[in-house]
Amino acid sequence: MTITAPEPPGTGPAPHHETVPPVKLWLCPNDALPPAIAGILASHWLDERENETAARFLFERDRRQYLVSHTLVRRALALEAGLAEAELVIWRSSRGRPFLQPLSGGLPRGGGHLDFNLSHSGGYSLLGIVRSQRIGVDVESLGRETGALETILATFTPQEQRWAAEVPPGRRRDRRVLRLWTLKEAYSKARGLGLGLPFDEFAFTLDDDRGVLAFQPPADDLTGRWRFLELEPVPEVLAAVAVPADENPAPHLELLQGFPWDRAAPHTIALPEPVGAPHGHVPG
Image (cartoon, rainbow, N blue to C red; front, side):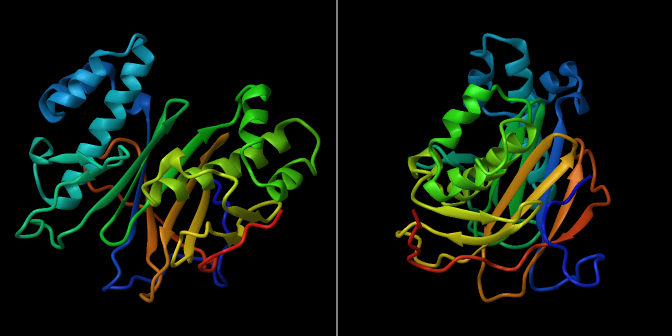
């Protein structure tokens, strides 16, 4: 696994803060769950709306991706909440962002809040879960058509377009474009806005090799301070995580791979320092 984020001095397991629950991140390939098992789990765990959505896919590969990603959500949330998978009630905001219905008495495994975010691409599903604040995640596979990446690049700020164009067309430029894209997707999804937030209204300054050096948030971001983590959990698959930065000690991130049949031992990663400032101005 390649971790494309600045490593703090004294690289090693992140310190555990008892009062700051870790960010949980699950990466699950489609082949971690055989199609027959995914279908059985979906029939027992997913709600009526989810099963109706799965039935509408024309291509089996798309249906399989949907079933794996949504059974992953149910299973991982069940482990965190202490509820049975079928008991979880998932609502959607007016913009379509899913969230877990709060329980008046709190969750059986502690706390009253779980926020989660899901992304899937190229046969992988990525799920982020936090017990406070919000989270946004995105996963993308390298190997997209050049035309599609050029269209993506045109949605960025001029400064980001210039940075991507510093390297010639090819794999290096594709990587730069997708690094920016995953970060922008993760931030927008954490805000609950998705593609409703124009991608030229906020900007990232990235290290050539790894890490977010600076972040200029859009004008409506009143706090503007975020922690961003870039990952390449498997070769040619890029992922990004966005969580708001607050006054609490920095949480660490626990990365788990495969389908969560149990509480497997995670890979622990320290989250980078916050970047950004309120009422940012996007440079041209």
